[in-house]
Length: 467
Image (cartoon, rainbow, N blue to C red):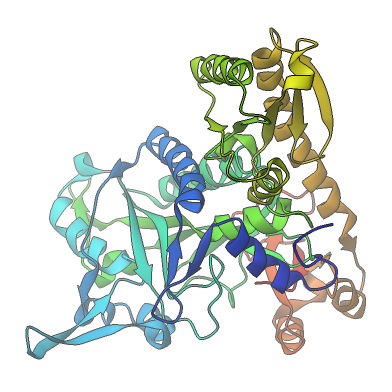
């Protein structure tokens, strides 16, 4: 019997129980902050390191900017400050006295990075300038929820400057596909629908905003990544210009893009089941646990041999020899934590030259010979990753309904996602959907591809309830 509340009985409660019992994270002392525990952070480190490699492969260089930003920087781009004002945390006192100018705690870094881009860019030779930083940000959240909506969270934010609009648009598309969609799909095993945001949902100060939307097991949408074309809005606000090859001064074209610890929430809610977390092997902090059933010398020798073989094959593996805890309790704990595979080593199996492999996703057990155990585990890890993605795609597609009227779309989006011609929705329909807690998550072309502009003809709206 599961030690967790079943998902179909109370999904939010299930989510909170997984956070706690899988030892992922807990609330911090200030409302909306979180403490990410070692096991949870081991997963985040795997996600982060893989995304970082993709970002570097796309040409961006790592930087770090201060988290305290002069308030005056925000006021240079009117739309930006208007949108972020309710979310800003501002320092007015420091060193025992009132500051001459308030300092905003970083909610995002377009303004401070724009100021320094102005200093670093002089001519076309300095372009494109492609930067990325991993940092924490603070946005005062009224309804916080760990990993999903935090006052403080971790993320990466990329910021680039280009000589032409076409170059900026191409780079934004590259990030959307090769960094965001690919990492979510192939590493977190989360299938996403990518598209362009409506004017209402567009990021403050952006010309175009794009997103990757994932469907959770309860049918709601979670925005997992965003990328933005700012045109020349920030370039003009911060006077970021360059001397072009024709000898004329021109403003640059800028972009920004990011992914955050919200992905951890997505991973939990896409793959988790009534027995706890299920972690895709690629991003698992621990991919395999070799668990000793008995405190016997022969059992220990075989367990250590299998562990060493897995380590030699670059598998992240741990040995569980906690004999002060019952085998049943240890197994349940590992299942709640979602360890992809556990290998059980016991005297009875060893007498026949066997060990037992248990898959977390299917909970299936099968016996392996000791000699073949390491190679079989490697193969099984690949299969688990493949199956998790395939099953997530199937669950998502089952809950997407193509609709021909706004009424039909509203009904379908109560329990899943609706796809409907954007022409049948429009800004008026978008406002009416909001009254029912529904949003247009993104717009796509008819074939599911990402449009270059939200004004393109024959677009399809994806409508859902969202976290």
